Length: 204
Image 1 (cartoon, rainbow, N blue to C red):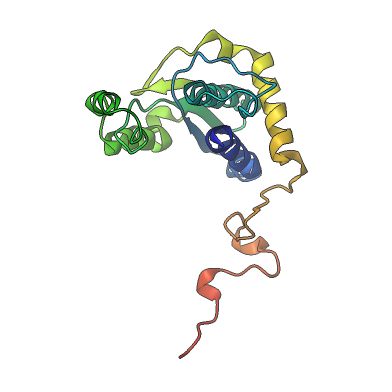
Image 2: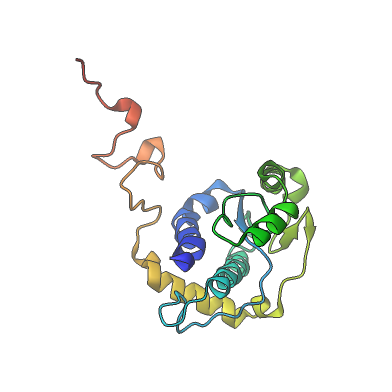
């Protein structure tokens, strides 16, 4: 579940939006992640055989970085920039089930959520980052990622496995598995899909 939530979900969403991103002529993809040195076990990515929560979390953060670098390579010179961003420790309920001393230390060294959000928004819209591509960022500066993340073989292998696990290559461009209109422009809404505001209202 952790691998699916932290990696496969963002991978599939981005994959299905690639045509839209490319057609826009200028777009930014930002993957929120954290530094990781956990190497992936490609034979047990979802932890079915041997699950450890800390290792699993580290593996998903590694997957985010590998995905970022592979996507950045594929988007080179397209107008679509791709970067990973580490917002730092953020105060949330993520550690609510941890031991009290761990919760306290995490809170002590964490920043408010709005501070992290400001950093994400800055990278997303500021002209300062318009040309930034294929970087791992923290507080607006590039930081060094583990050597394992920079290996093109690891990047490509994860991409290919992720395609298979999500059946991404079998989907139509901009396919929305929820059946909503979120991924369609006004001129190409398929028959049978209507906007919520267009639904007839029932009178009492």
